[in-house]
Length: 464
Image 1: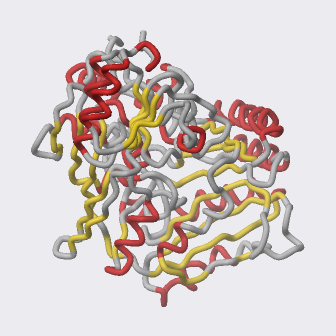
Image 2: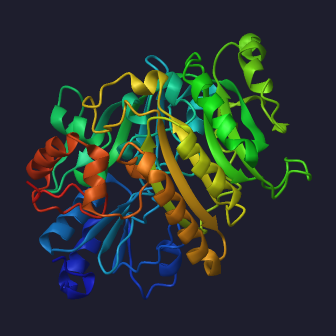
């Protein structure tokens, strides 16, 4: 069983402090409570020590300390993980937020990014060059966590998942060694980190392929929640038959504050958030079938790509109560659509939502075995999130989320996108990796046989 920091000799902790350039933070420090905060305020854990790393040497020293003293290790990049898997009780948090840099190479449109960066920092650096790396939909999300889990977002249909654009990574392994992994070097490990999460080591830098994206046409359209079944059927038939330039994820939600008109605010709705990367001159013709469905609201127009990436940042700042459940889906038939309407009508708080992200176009071209992300043949990565700023509403949003998931899960493909999961147990992890779990297990045994990195959607090396 893992020991806590309290059981480690003081001399060993003092030795670590001498080895690193960063800072050690303990529960008695004035800023401890601030430093232990993560994005999801429903997770309230108290690590014995936080190591604020500033370089790779700090990471190596921290990993060696954790291994040699049998200390539980959690690794935190952006701290966005829904299940709070970037923090732990009693053990050590290796905080990568000081490892930040974004280096754009315009010769080959590649980008090197530090393990502690968030996606907004990447977009800020790439946008002046007319480039973007496919990522999520919230700019404060950490690069590391999102990438290692897969990376679904606005550009998925056009340029694939984030892992499809990962070319190389620098890693600190469980034995404290440092390696660079790519298709030619530690190819098995490179395969594993493209969807296998933080099971295999700590990534201190990433190299991505960026793509020409400057201005997009995007934004939401809304329909009354009563039309959910009709719109989901139409959406399923429409979107997957469109060119890869058009992406849109469908949602059930409550219409929030401005820029939405007062007549719609606080109304339950079915919505789609669009992102178009093609020729602006073709957009009106491509979008005509959407307008022909008579949405009650449209707020779609040209914007810089970083603007669509930050569109929801203001609605979802750090420090709110979050509960997540997720599934993959192959279709949006009448039975599951009816559940989406029913639970969409019962959304309990303004910020609670359900999203279905399309998996088609470029995201569906790799096989299920090309990366650990084992649901390339599904049509949607779905997530239900109960969200509210008030801790008094935590139980309410959690119960709504669980009930929604239980009603739709029978129509699912079986597993879930790991970045959308809470800490749900080994059976769910295995279901999410399908047949790839056995290969991940073998790689885990090779690189982390003692399961040093286990605060994650864990690939247990003891599983046979």
